[in-house]
Amino acid sequence: MPFTNEPPFRHGDAAHTHSTTAVLYCNLGTPDEATAPALRRYLAEFLSDQRVVEIPRLLWLAILHGIILRIRPKKSAAKYASIWMPEGSPLKVWTQKQAALLGSELSAIGHHVQVRYAMRYGNPSIASELALLKEQGVTRVLIMPAYPQYSATTTASVFDAVYTWAAKARRLPEFRFVNHYHDDPGYIAALAASIQAHWAANGQADKLVMSFHGVPERTLQLGDPYHCECYKTARLVAEKLGLAKDRLQVTFQSRFGKAKWLEPYTEPTLIKLAAEGVKSVDVVCPGFTGDCLETLEEINMEAREAFLHAGGDKFSYIPCLNNSPTWIAALAQISAQHLAGWPTHTAPDLQTLAASKAAALALGAKQ
Image 1 (cartoon, one colour):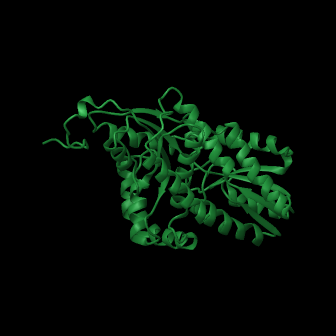
Image 2: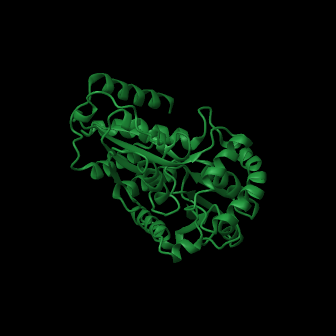
Image 3: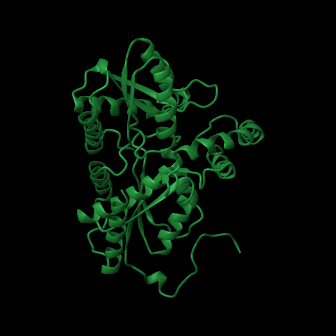
Protein backbone atom coordinates (compact mmCIF):
# COMPACT_ATOMS: atom_id res chain seq x y z
CA MET A 1 0.00 0.00 0.00
CA PRO A 2 1.57 3.34 -1.02
CA PHE A 3 2.54 5.80 1.70
CA THR A 4 0.07 8.57 2.34
CA ASN A 5 -0.56 11.07 5.10
CA GLU A 6 -4.32 10.95 4.47
CA PRO A 7 -6.48 10.15 7.52
CA PRO A 8 -8.67 7.03 7.28
CA PHE A 9 -11.77 7.55 5.13
CA ARG A 10 -14.92 8.09 7.18
CA HIS A 11 -18.49 7.77 5.94
CA GLY A 12 -19.78 11.18 4.90
CA ASP A 13 -16.38 12.79 4.29
CA ALA A 14 -17.01 13.25 0.59
CA ALA A 15 -20.17 15.22 1.29
CA HIS A 16 -18.60 17.29 4.07
CA THR A 17 -19.08 20.93 3.00
CA HIS A 18 -18.45 22.92 6.22
CA SER A 19 -15.37 25.11 5.55
CA THR A 20 -13.01 26.17 8.29
CA THR A 21 -9.99 28.44 8.09
CA ALA A 22 -6.68 28.43 9.95
CA VAL A 23 -3.55 30.52 10.26
CA LEU A 24 -0.30 28.59 10.66
CA TYR A 25 2.32 30.85 12.24
CA CYS A 26 5.74 29.47 11.26
CA ASN A 27 9.08 30.19 12.88
CA LEU A 28 12.58 28.86 12.28
CA GLY A 29 12.82 26.27 15.04
CA THR A 30 14.73 25.29 18.13
CA PRO A 31 16.13 22.20 19.82
CA ASP A 32 13.85 20.36 22.24
CA GLU A 33 16.42 20.62 25.03
CA ALA A 34 19.65 22.49 25.74
CA THR A 35 21.71 19.33 25.38
CA ALA A 36 24.27 18.14 22.86
CA PRO A 37 22.13 15.24 21.53
CA ALA A 38 19.14 17.57 21.04
CA LEU A 39 21.35 20.14 19.30
CA ARG A 40 22.80 17.44 17.06
CA ARG A 41 19.32 16.43 15.89
CA TYR A 42 18.26 20.01 15.37
CA LEU A 43 21.41 21.15 13.56
CA ALA A 44 21.38 18.06 11.34
CA GLU A 45 17.91 19.00 10.09
CA PHE A 46 18.59 22.75 9.90
CA LEU A 47 21.95 22.59 8.16
CA SER A 48 20.84 19.88 5.74
CA ASP A 49 18.36 22.29 4.14
CA GLN A 50 19.69 23.30 0.73
CA ARG A 51 17.97 26.66 1.10
CA VAL A 52 20.20 27.36 4.11
CA VAL A 53 23.52 26.09 2.76
CA GLU A 54 23.84 26.52 -1.00
CA ILE A 55 27.07 24.67 -1.78
CA PRO A 56 27.48 21.32 -3.59
CA ARG A 57 25.45 18.88 -1.53
CA LEU A 58 27.81 15.89 -1.32
CA LEU A 59 30.69 18.12 -0.26
CA TRP A 60 28.57 19.90 2.33
CA LEU A 61 27.11 16.70 3.82
CA ALA A 62 30.62 15.34 4.27
CA ILE A 63 31.62 18.51 6.13
CA LEU A 64 28.40 18.61 8.12
CA HIS A 65 28.47 15.01 9.36
CA GLY A 66 32.24 14.61 9.43
CA ILE A 67 33.13 17.83 11.26
CA ILE A 68 30.34 20.21 12.28
CA LEU A 69 27.97 17.75 13.96
CA ARG A 70 30.89 16.31 15.92
CA ILE A 71 32.00 19.67 17.33
CA ARG A 72 29.25 22.27 17.29
CA PRO A 73 26.40 20.61 19.27
CA LYS A 74 28.23 20.73 22.60
CA LYS A 75 29.20 24.38 22.16
CA SER A 76 25.72 25.36 21.00
CA ALA A 77 24.09 23.47 23.87
CA ALA A 78 26.04 25.56 26.38
CA LYS A 79 24.82 28.74 24.68
CA TYR A 80 21.22 27.58 24.70
CA ALA A 81 21.52 26.63 28.38
CA SER A 82 22.54 30.21 29.18
CA ILE A 83 19.24 31.64 27.87
CA TRP A 84 16.83 28.72 28.46
CA MET A 85 13.56 29.74 30.13
CA PRO A 86 11.59 27.70 32.72
CA GLU A 87 9.00 27.03 29.99
CA GLY A 88 11.64 26.01 27.46
CA SER A 89 13.45 27.60 24.53
CA PRO A 90 12.71 31.36 24.30
CA LEU A 91 11.96 31.15 20.59
CA LYS A 92 9.38 28.44 21.14
CA VAL A 93 7.89 30.18 24.18
CA TRP A 94 7.41 33.48 22.36
CA THR A 95 6.16 31.83 19.16
CA GLN A 96 3.56 29.88 21.11
CA LYS A 97 2.42 32.98 22.99
CA GLN A 98 2.24 35.06 19.82
CA ALA A 99 0.10 32.42 18.09
CA ALA A 100 -2.34 32.28 21.01
CA LEU A 101 -2.56 36.06 21.26
CA LEU A 102 -2.94 36.34 17.48
CA GLY A 103 -5.92 33.99 17.61
CA SER A 104 -7.52 36.05 20.36
CA GLU A 105 -6.89 39.33 18.52
CA LEU A 106 -8.27 38.00 15.23
CA SER A 107 -11.39 36.84 17.06
CA ALA A 108 -11.76 40.29 18.62
CA ILE A 109 -11.81 41.93 15.17
CA GLY A 110 -14.28 39.41 13.79
CA HIS A 111 -12.12 36.70 12.21
CA HIS A 112 -12.99 33.39 13.82
CA VAL A 113 -10.13 31.20 12.69
CA GLN A 114 -7.92 28.60 14.29
CA VAL A 115 -4.34 29.78 14.86
CA ARG A 116 -1.56 27.28 15.43
CA TYR A 117 2.22 27.56 15.34
CA ALA A 118 4.86 25.36 13.73
CA MET A 119 8.62 25.19 13.34
CA ARG A 120 10.51 24.77 10.09
CA TYR A 121 13.07 22.67 11.97
CA GLY A 122 12.27 20.77 15.14
CA ASN A 123 8.90 20.46 16.85
CA PRO A 124 6.06 20.93 16.23
CA SER A 125 6.86 20.48 12.55
CA ILE A 126 4.98 22.16 9.73
CA ALA A 127 3.99 18.75 8.35
CA SER A 128 2.54 17.54 11.65
CA GLU A 129 0.53 20.74 12.14
CA LEU A 130 -0.85 20.67 8.59
CA ALA A 131 -1.85 17.03 9.03
CA LEU A 132 -3.63 17.91 12.27
CA LEU A 133 -5.47 20.84 10.69
CA LYS A 134 -6.58 18.64 7.82
CA GLU A 135 -7.77 15.95 10.22
CA GLN A 136 -9.83 18.61 12.00
CA GLY A 137 -11.57 19.55 8.77
CA VAL A 138 -9.72 22.79 8.00
CA THR A 139 -10.05 23.60 4.30
CA ARG A 140 -8.19 26.92 4.09
CA VAL A 141 -4.77 27.68 5.57
CA LEU A 142 -2.89 30.97 5.65
CA ILE A 143 0.85 30.39 6.04
CA MET A 144 2.24 33.28 8.11
CA PRO A 145 6.04 33.22 8.55
CA ALA A 146 7.48 34.94 11.62
CA TYR A 147 10.05 36.58 9.32
CA PRO A 148 9.20 40.21 8.41
CA GLN A 149 11.87 40.33 5.67
CA TYR A 150 11.72 37.79 2.85
CA SER A 151 14.68 35.51 2.25
CA ALA A 152 14.97 32.29 0.32
CA THR A 153 16.90 30.91 3.30
CA THR A 154 13.94 31.38 5.64
CA THR A 155 10.60 32.32 4.05
CA ALA A 156 11.00 30.17 0.95
CA SER A 157 12.16 27.26 3.09
CA VAL A 158 8.89 27.44 5.05
CA PHE A 159 7.00 27.31 1.77
CA ASP A 160 9.12 24.31 0.71
CA ALA A 161 7.98 22.43 3.81
CA VAL A 162 4.35 23.14 2.96
CA TYR A 163 4.85 21.97 -0.64
CA THR A 164 6.60 18.79 0.55
CA TRP A 165 3.68 17.91 2.80
CA ALA A 166 1.18 18.78 0.07
CA ALA A 167 2.93 16.51 -2.43
CA LYS A 168 1.89 13.51 -0.33
CA ALA A 169 -1.73 14.53 0.27
CA ARG A 170 -4.60 13.73 -2.08
CA ARG A 171 -7.18 16.29 -1.01
CA LEU A 172 -5.48 19.58 -0.24
CA PRO A 173 -6.73 22.62 1.61
CA GLU A 174 -6.50 25.98 -0.10
CA PHE A 175 -3.28 27.78 0.75
CA ARG A 176 -2.25 31.40 0.92
CA PHE A 177 1.28 32.55 1.75
CA VAL A 178 2.51 35.78 3.31
CA ASN A 179 5.83 36.64 1.68
CA HIS A 180 6.88 39.58 3.82
CA TYR A 181 5.73 42.55 5.89
CA HIS A 182 9.01 44.42 6.28
CA ASP A 183 7.38 47.76 5.45
CA ASP A 184 3.94 47.20 6.97
CA PRO A 185 2.91 50.37 8.87
CA GLY A 186 1.74 48.39 11.90
CA TYR A 187 5.00 46.45 12.14
CA ILE A 188 7.04 49.64 11.75
CA ALA A 189 4.92 51.42 14.37
CA ALA A 190 5.36 48.52 16.80
CA LEU A 191 9.15 48.63 16.40
CA ALA A 192 9.22 52.39 16.85
CA ALA A 193 6.99 52.18 19.94
CA SER A 194 9.29 49.56 21.48
CA ILE A 195 12.35 51.75 20.94
CA GLN A 196 10.58 54.86 22.22
CA ALA A 197 9.50 53.03 25.37
CA HIS A 198 13.11 51.99 25.98
CA TRP A 199 14.30 55.56 25.49
CA ALA A 200 11.64 56.90 27.84
CA ALA A 201 12.84 54.55 30.57
CA ASN A 202 16.60 54.62 29.92
CA GLY A 203 17.43 57.64 27.76
CA GLN A 204 18.91 57.59 24.26
CA ALA A 205 22.34 56.20 23.48
CA ASP A 206 24.83 57.83 21.11
CA LYS A 207 23.94 55.28 18.42
CA LEU A 208 20.98 53.07 17.59
CA VAL A 209 22.27 49.84 16.05
CA MET A 210 19.77 47.72 14.11
CA SER A 211 21.20 44.24 13.80
CA PHE A 212 19.61 41.86 11.29
CA HIS A 213 20.43 38.19 10.82
CA GLY A 214 23.10 37.77 8.18
CA VAL A 215 23.05 35.71 4.99
CA PRO A 216 25.82 35.05 2.45
CA GLU A 217 26.45 38.01 0.14
CA ARG A 218 25.96 35.62 -2.77
CA THR A 219 22.22 35.52 -2.01
CA LEU A 220 21.98 39.24 -2.82
CA GLN A 221 23.81 38.72 -6.09
CA LEU A 222 21.37 35.93 -6.98
CA GLY A 223 18.39 38.22 -6.51
CA ASP A 224 17.30 37.67 -2.90
CA PRO A 225 15.50 40.86 -1.70
CA TYR A 226 16.45 40.35 1.95
CA HIS A 227 19.27 42.93 2.07
CA CYS A 228 17.10 45.66 0.56
CA GLU A 229 14.13 44.84 2.78
CA CYS A 230 16.28 45.04 5.92
CA TYR A 231 17.49 48.51 4.94
CA LYS A 232 13.96 49.62 4.12
CA THR A 233 12.75 48.49 7.53
CA ALA A 234 15.58 50.40 9.19
CA ARG A 235 14.88 53.54 7.18
CA LEU A 236 11.15 53.49 7.93
CA VAL A 237 11.70 52.96 11.65
CA ALA A 238 14.28 55.77 11.76
CA GLU A 239 11.83 58.08 9.99
CA LYS A 240 9.08 57.12 12.43
CA LEU A 241 11.42 57.95 15.30
CA GLY A 242 12.67 61.17 13.71
CA LEU A 243 16.19 59.82 14.08
CA ALA A 244 19.02 61.53 12.21
CA LYS A 245 20.94 59.36 9.75
CA ASP A 246 24.21 59.70 11.67
CA ARG A 247 22.56 58.23 14.79
CA LEU A 248 21.62 54.97 13.04
CA GLN A 249 23.83 52.00 12.13
CA VAL A 250 22.56 48.92 10.29
CA THR A 251 24.53 45.69 10.75
CA PHE A 252 24.25 41.95 10.09
CA GLN A 253 24.98 39.23 12.65
CA SER A 254 25.39 35.44 12.89
CA ARG A 255 28.01 34.91 10.21
CA PHE A 256 28.87 31.25 9.68
CA GLY A 257 31.76 29.79 7.71
CA LYS A 258 34.44 31.54 5.66
CA ALA A 259 32.34 32.95 2.82
CA LYS A 260 31.64 36.66 2.63
CA TRP A 261 28.30 37.57 4.20
CA LEU A 262 26.28 40.76 4.14
CA GLU A 263 28.21 43.60 5.70
CA PRO A 264 28.83 45.40 7.97
CA TYR A 265 29.10 42.65 10.57
CA THR A 266 27.56 43.45 13.95
CA GLU A 267 30.29 42.65 16.47
CA PRO A 268 33.22 44.14 14.50
CA THR A 269 31.12 47.28 13.94
CA LEU A 270 30.42 47.63 17.67
CA ILE A 271 34.14 47.27 18.41
CA LYS A 272 34.91 49.91 15.77
CA LEU A 273 32.31 52.30 17.19
CA ALA A 274 33.81 51.96 20.67
CA ALA A 275 37.31 52.58 19.28
CA GLU A 276 36.04 55.74 17.56
CA GLY A 277 34.75 57.14 20.83
CA VAL A 278 31.09 56.13 20.79
CA LYS A 279 30.34 55.59 24.47
CA SER A 280 26.82 54.20 24.40
CA VAL A 281 24.75 52.10 22.01
CA ASP A 282 21.18 50.85 21.90
CA VAL A 283 20.91 47.60 19.95
CA VAL A 284 17.65 46.26 18.52
CA CYS A 285 17.06 43.26 16.23
CA PRO A 286 14.06 44.08 13.98
CA GLY A 287 14.28 40.88 11.94
CA PHE A 288 13.44 38.72 14.96
CA THR A 289 9.84 39.01 16.17
CA GLY A 290 10.62 37.05 19.33
CA ASP A 291 13.73 36.83 21.48
CA CYS A 292 15.91 33.80 20.84
CA LEU A 293 19.50 32.57 20.95
CA GLU A 294 20.62 35.12 18.36
CA THR A 295 19.31 38.06 20.37
CA LEU A 296 19.70 36.95 23.98
CA GLU A 297 23.10 35.26 23.76
CA GLU A 298 24.78 36.53 20.60
CA ILE A 299 23.75 40.17 21.03
CA ASN A 300 22.96 40.73 24.70
CA MET A 301 25.93 38.66 25.93
CA GLU A 302 28.67 38.31 23.30
CA ALA A 303 28.19 41.64 21.47
CA ARG A 304 27.74 43.45 24.78
CA GLU A 305 31.03 42.10 26.08
CA ALA A 306 32.83 43.00 22.85
CA PHE A 307 31.61 46.62 22.91
CA LEU A 308 32.40 47.19 26.59
CA HIS A 309 35.80 45.49 26.30
CA ALA A 310 36.66 47.77 23.35
CA GLY A 311 36.07 50.88 25.46
CA GLY A 312 32.33 51.48 25.31
CA ASP A 313 30.59 52.59 28.51
CA LYS A 314 26.97 51.56 28.09
CA PHE A 315 25.36 48.81 26.02
CA SER A 316 21.57 48.56 26.05
CA TYR A 317 19.71 45.72 24.36
CA ILE A 318 16.12 46.51 23.34
CA PRO A 319 14.05 43.28 23.48
CA CYS A 320 12.21 41.94 20.46
CA LEU A 321 8.52 42.65 19.94
CA ASN A 322 7.58 39.42 21.76
CA ASN A 323 4.05 39.87 23.18
CA SER A 324 3.82 43.64 22.66
CA PRO A 325 0.14 44.59 22.19
CA THR A 326 1.03 46.89 19.28
CA TRP A 327 2.84 44.02 17.58
CA ILE A 328 0.04 41.51 18.13
CA ALA A 329 -2.45 44.05 16.74
CA ALA A 330 -0.22 44.59 13.70
CA LEU A 331 0.20 40.84 13.16
CA ALA A 332 -3.58 40.44 13.29
CA GLN A 333 -4.10 43.20 10.73
CA ILE A 334 -1.52 41.67 8.38
CA SER A 335 -3.23 38.29 8.74
CA ALA A 336 -6.68 39.84 8.18
CA GLN A 337 -5.50 41.44 4.93
CA HIS A 338 -4.46 38.04 3.61
CA LEU A 339 -7.61 36.33 4.89
CA ALA A 340 -9.79 38.70 2.86
CA GLY A 341 -12.47 36.88 0.87
CA TRP A 342 -12.36 33.72 2.95
CA PRO A 343 -15.39 32.95 5.15
CA THR A 344 -13.93 33.79 8.56
CA HIS A 345 -16.85 35.68 10.09
CA THR A 346 -18.89 32.63 11.13
CA ALA A 347 -18.62 32.32 14.88
CA PRO A 348 -17.20 29.04 16.19
CA ASP A 349 -19.07 26.90 18.69
CA LEU A 350 -19.12 28.24 22.25
CA GLN A 351 -16.84 25.52 23.57
CA THR A 352 -14.10 26.33 21.04
CA LEU A 353 -14.41 30.07 21.68
CA ALA A 354 -14.27 29.59 25.45
CA ALA A 355 -11.17 27.40 25.13
CA SER A 356 -9.46 30.02 22.93
CA LYS A 357 -10.17 32.82 25.38
CA ALA A 358 -9.04 30.72 28.35
CA ALA A 359 -5.75 29.90 26.62
CA ALA A 360 -5.08 33.57 25.84
CA LEU A 361 -5.91 34.62 29.41
CA ALA A 362 -3.66 31.91 30.82
CA LEU A 363 -0.75 33.09 28.67
CA GLY A 364 -1.39 36.68 29.69
CA ALA A 365 -1.29 35.72 33.36
CA LYS A 366 2.20 34.23 32.90
CA GLN A 367 3.66 37.41 31.33
